[in-house]
Length: 248
Length: 270
Image (cartoon, rainbow over all chains, first blue to last red; front, side, top):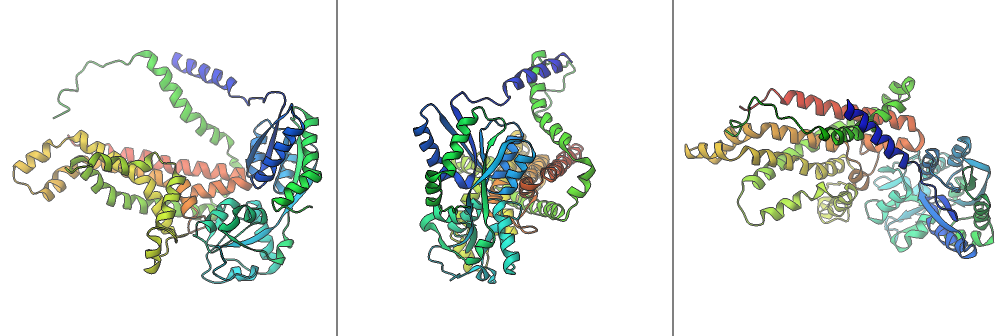
């Protein structure tokens, strides 16, 4: 019995130390969708150069993971989501201060093995029998966009796998497991020569809009606002468009 | 033979301080399980765990885990016998190699399988010529589960073989029994509990397999999306469904572990 009490006491003591650590002053913590990794890393360096007293800490993950982390009390100043749905979740949970601003858009593209050996020309070709097609599951933003495209084009896809992240789709194509996949234009740009991108006009029927917002628990709101200004300003637009993003 | 020295009547007490870290360890394991149960959305629990996608994933998980356990027994039992009783050079090196998946992150196992059985893999090309396509099939799930579970069976059975010792086998051999007879009538009955617990461990490990499956087999309802993959996917949109399915997986795993422990007890080899 005494052992039990002591054990509970030790666990309680340990847990006072495991509450979220607050970052030191002068640190700006940005939670951003995984697809923003390249442009936001670049923009964070630019921000640090312009604001010598501030260090930017970046946390990249799937948007829904980030919302879950914020909901569980993860300390952060800025949140950039890969779709409106996850930003809405954050707003509804009272995590966001003010209203989010849309700063970029992303569309889907077909990627194939290098050189496009199966000769895929457009979205309808993805329904070819025997084609090993990999897409995102409808539960994640890229899969929701894929489902919207199927509805708007009337083409029914028969994928061999529905992955839970767009990077897994890309991985299945670059490793040669799949013949083709549907990923974001920005992912295709990152993959470079490892894939051949086949853009298709119907993609504009499913545009993912990226919103960014200051968080309610932000330590330094003016620094957070300054970072968002950088992202939405001319410099941010240039960096984002170099990475393949379009403007809303 | 070995148990004759024990069985004394004086109970040996443990040092009292040992209970504190032991309790902490138990709490460390139990509290997260309690936390999951506390988070369950009970009014919707039954519809959540009996939804079509949940049932499909559970059935697929149980089928593939059973298949991979069978494969683990078929390949792992001979491996354990050879490693415990065989005499050949490089045995310790081989032993370390086949146990490697035990310490590998499953995602690394998945990548390794991809480059072995995948379309561009070491054996994948030959398999494709034979008309066998492993990629994105249920076979791929079974291969991934077997790869990560095999060492559990081997370790468990090899440990049983070593602690049983070769005494009875030597007696049987001295009396003129042939190797096959010794294996069938002495060795296997002797280590049967070890083989069973190894099989249970392999089944439980297969049931929980996630990383290698996701990397190697993909995720499609009814074909490759096992219960852990379904949980991971549901978590994206419906945390309540993910928690409910987690409890379902915990319940199935607990049922297997507890059920097999209860059944094993009467089979004692005095």
